[in-house]
Length: 111
Image (cartoon, rainbow, N blue to C red; front, side, top):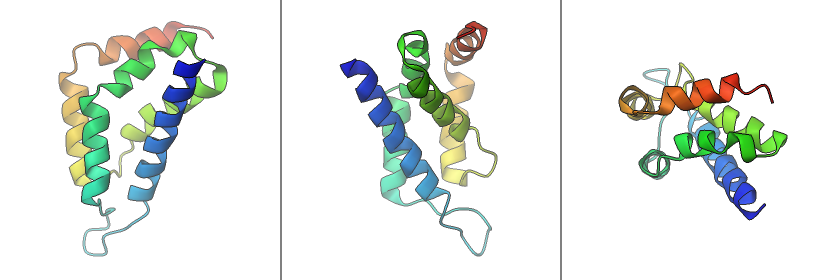
């Protein structure tokens, strides 16, 4: 239960940071501006391999927490992410050895 709470808390913090990031538009480019602090949070999130770790725990999490995990994964793939964020996410997605397997495992689980 403590692990579920920690995962849900980290998930919500990242979702909040990501939604705040996407709310600040760059007038010149039409894209959201990213603060250095927000970029640092994303770097830590990816460096800790949290997306895959969260996906790995899907079968042990409560329904509401699973929804939060999927919301984070979906948010990482939004098409209008700021360029700095999108580049880091794409590198993570393209070169991670097990990310797609974890996504497919989660999809295959009917719960």
